[in-house]
Length: 288
Image 1 (spheres, rainbow, N blue to C red):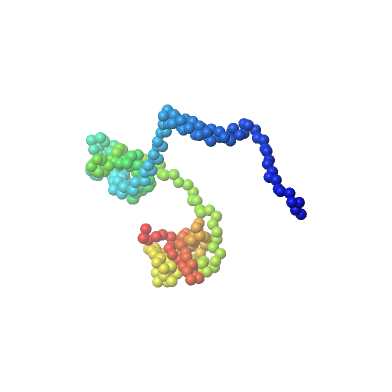
Image 2: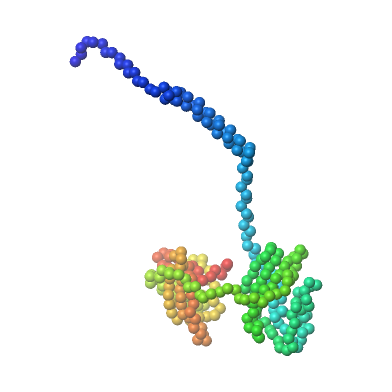
């Protein structure tokens, strides 16, 4: 309904605290002052105590590859040092002479008894440490015919010219630390009969060195090196999945032509191709 009276504008008057009005008006200036003070403080800190560069991470030196020549040198010395015949002392002295120098006693300090002899049946390096880049200390295991199995450390150095030389007298030591066998932890048993059948058949042909029969169970591109000692597979005792689920661990019983029986463990890489299991590798990589 219209009354014919003109409409009037409404004016609302609101009051606000004076400190709030001043704060809103002065806030940008306060922020600018605070930023300036922070910048001055940071400049003063850098001038008084400048930041020190982070120390570079220590370079990790990759382990040096085995020095085959130095190892052979240590084994040769151990063989000559431990091989002697009291009836022919000059022979022992001549054998050791190439290793000695002015800084070592004659015969490397070895004095033979009144009688007896000793020969080394085999010797090999079983442990090595490197006190410095050009110095090696090898532990050589040597099987002797009279004193049994001995462990001898031999220190070998490379001179400035690259030649090999003894770095001191040898030492008799104990064997490297060892303990009881540590079988693999709990593994998941293979429950697929078709896979067990393929593994058993492949191992039977592998142990018998039947390359033609084995090829039927090999994956495309598989490289397998057959053992030199032919064996007859007697039984597959256990078949488990190896960690990673792309290979299996097979424990078997086998026998050689002489009637010697063995319990053996093989790891086989397996793949599933076109609905059937195939063997990609047996225990080792012949190309590695």
